[in-house]
Amino acid sequence: MTERLASNDASFVSQWERYKERANQQLDRVFSELPAGATRGLGKAMRYSTLNGGKRFRAMLVYASGACFGASTRSLDAPAVALELIHAYSLVHDDLPAMDDDDLRRGRASCHIEFDEATAILVGDALQSFAFDLLAEQSKFLNATQQLKMVRQLAAASGIAGMAGGQSLDIFATGQTLDQASLQVIHEKKTGALIRAALHLGALAAPDISDRDLSIIDEYGRLIGLAFQVVDDILDQTQTSKQLGKQSGADTAMDKNTYPALLGLTASQQYADQLVQSAQQSLVKLGRDTDFLHQLAEFTRFRDH
Image 1 (cartoon, rainbow, N blue to C red):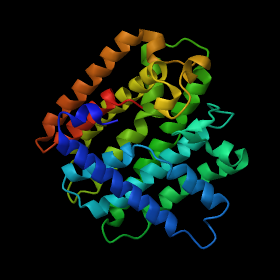
Image 2 (image 1 turned 90 degrees about the vertical axis):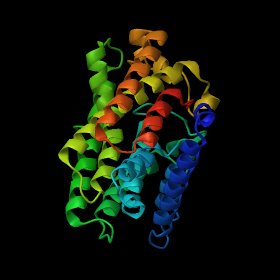
Image 3 (image 1 turned 90 degrees about the horizontal axis):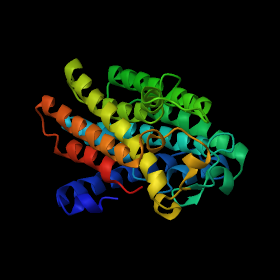
């Protein structure tokens, strides 16, 4: 995953591992604090679906954005965990037979295969409400105004104006031929909305964040969110199921609209390059230490799963 970047900057890889470890520790903590008996049944399936590996990319964006704007690490734990819970819920529901019908997730059986379909539906429901419960919980590190802004940001990014709306558009567009503008709308919602939200939540944890800074970090998020999806489409064509940890070639098999299908593989790779470069250029306007965010943009382009 980080091999290409490792040869260029060991400090990036070291910071990546620190953020990933913290996210995993915080996820483990919140699950360990569930009520007695919750480790069985639904609670067990929730834990299975969340603590099953993963890059923790969205949590990493929360930590990286917050650090850029001077937020304390402890103030970023709740929003980072909330993002990962929402993301986990989306994957559980994406894998369902009525959606993308995938039996494999992160190299292991999907939730509905390991447990059953009804449990998987409830896991998604419970993870979503758990995320907002944690984000709204009384905190020593965030004030009520910050929390309210975060709750609204994550709700908008998760719902009809964001991820769920994008998923719906994607389903209805299956089997049709879209132009690039229409495809971009789908993926800016389906994939990009949570990525943008992660960066917003990190910034909102800062003691004093300006509208200008939020606008700049949002533009960076929009560009890397789109790049992330373009690369997802490329990887679906070029990697094996073992490399991806999920079924490769699934988009083609389901007649999904993808960037390689629309633009061709080479043009899609060039488009991803352009998006990443534009994202990196947008960071210059912040006038802050954005090295880690700069390299996170590069990671979206050169990741292998």
